[in-house]
Amino acid sequence: MLEPAILHYCKYQERCHMEVRNKLYELGFSTETVDLQISELIQNGVLNEERFARAFARGKFRMMQWGREKIKQQLKLKKVSDYCIKKGLTEIDSDDYEQTLHKLLNKKYFELRSERSIPKKKSKLYRYLIQKGYERDLVMDAINECMSKNK
Image 1 (tube, rainbow, N blue to C red):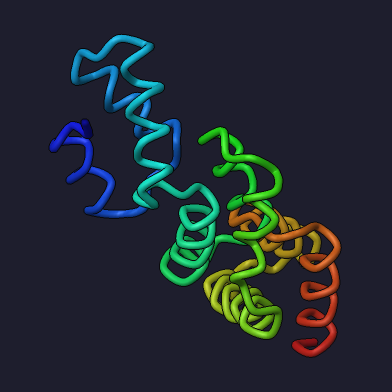
Image 2: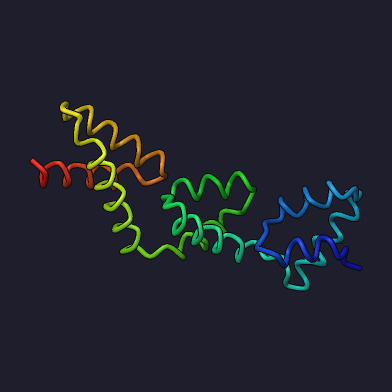
């Protein structure tokens, strides 16, 4: 029999297995009961890690403008399987990804307009985009393109 509190918890928004497991332990369940509850949630289609990974990737990219690397790292912290992470990352459209990278770059470039030193400006742009989770090669290409365009 599924616990009503955990059913509501899972239906409210997509959850990964780790979040549900932690919530069940918080509610005072034993390890055996936790495993039974999780397997029942999976069988009933309430808990689906691939669906969670897709929703997580979509949401973090659209709302927080995170890059693939940061999304991947956060999903690994939630102990989501590599297979589900790959599936989740397919939710990010390549064109949107490039546009978002360039939009963030241009916004930060404008904020750094008072910075006179080109190497310092490049370094700050690079650190900002890496911190957002974008891939190093894409970041370097975008920065070089931006710098040559704005000379």
